[in-house]
Length: 211
Image (cartoon, rainbow, N blue to C red):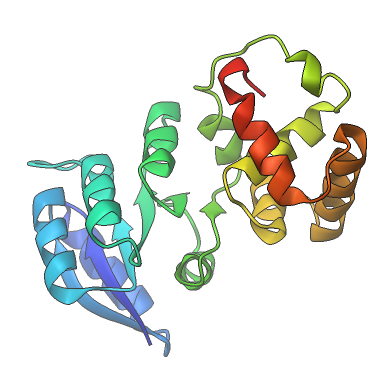
């Protein structure tokens, strides 16, 4: 069973989510919270596998709660579920440890699958949200070291540096894992690197110049 903590300041939303998710035989709702502070307290007490987190809430918002839960319970996965597709909310949530960001119009079956995926460690972003997640990254001139890469290869390299595996990169960029593998091989060849670990180190080394 995947143990889920529901966090949303609207009771009717929590009741709806509970009804939808408890219909799945592998999902168990172990608690609810109506603000980020209570969510943190519940998470520390219940140690859920996945926290389904709203963003705008009183007392402590979802971004701050995500950061606190990630720091204190690194094995607990946070999946943001909200109505807000604001660039800053998305980028901050992911930066502070969320494993996914979905909108509340996500169909129930897709939501259940997303919960299962983040529980396994995969990253989940709703359609069009990857572009928003990176929209706050400043646009800078491509470093000379990366001029040999295509724009798509630079995106793949950026995700490698962030620790994403091929499946997560494929999901983030909406391409196949085979295509990701081809991009990774091309990156290694173009940059004369041995493996993806060297690629991650290389990307991190020049990250201050931008990818």
